[in-house]
Length: 435
Image 1 (tube, one colour):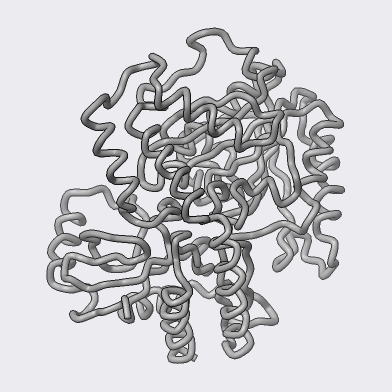
Image 2 (tube, one colour):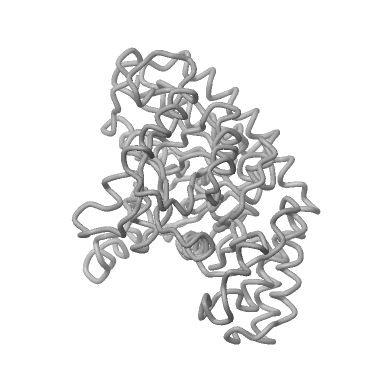
């Protein structure tokens, strides 16, 4: 057994450091399970009191190769002895990583630009789309989340991302995203994708000034509650953009690097976006992101138009090389697909027995558990969700929630069947206990 909780949660040492955090750190950090991490390995996290937990968060879908993978740690240590950073000079690590990333992408994406975080990759994508087209408007979606910089925040379709931060960047046109569980039009129609596509034309005709540069969309909406659109919807969006001369940006910051059971989520529909934003899993804990792009679009920029102090620094690029090697050698994409199917089937069985587990949805190792007050009304239940988070933590399982009531099931992609079974057993016990 991995999970072993030997003190009350939070333990005395966690209480000590949580008090220091409350005194000295800004309160704007995201609330989490009430523990303080000390070290982690694979899918296991140990807190400062010596309690061991199975992690279903992957550090917010970051540590795809598992916590502190020894090959990743070794690559970082070796590179740290050679070269840490050099602003905009080519390095062996960066140019060879660019080659590997381009070779893993659809053949229309033949350029790579490295940055530090997903928000920066998104900002870069929007900037280059505006430069290429000469237009300024961007279409984004209700419920979408693209980062916390002013530019990426302006694209968000969630009020919580923008509330009281003042005026946002102008020119954003928002349209509904097809949620099969909660139809944004309040209809029981099975073809929510068609409804949203029809409304897209209506929204553009009413809101656009005729200066649309791009559309940005996630393969699934992470912050909105792991919402996956109907099959074929993203392909229809891509065609719509092509027909209207609009740059199609796919935000795969969460979805890439095997999370959905494909290396890139675009593979599920054989998409060929003009720009793809990649983050999180590409560094598995190291700060690196990537914009994959078509040459014809990137060629609209001049030297020095886009750069990043730490973007593509040698230590992060060396880490990404190690991560790609680990993916290949340990077959993590295949494991994500197979373990995701297994865990989802077990969770769906729990749904049939649990009166407040309204929906189980996802693909690969990104699954959402929608906690509701009533399965008929689908009213969100953040209070019960909080109880589940706390009780799971007391039982040795770290989980988090998005949109207030959707529990993340997103363990590192190295999870084994035994580790999955133990963690699923904890979840089932908690759901039964709170019944």
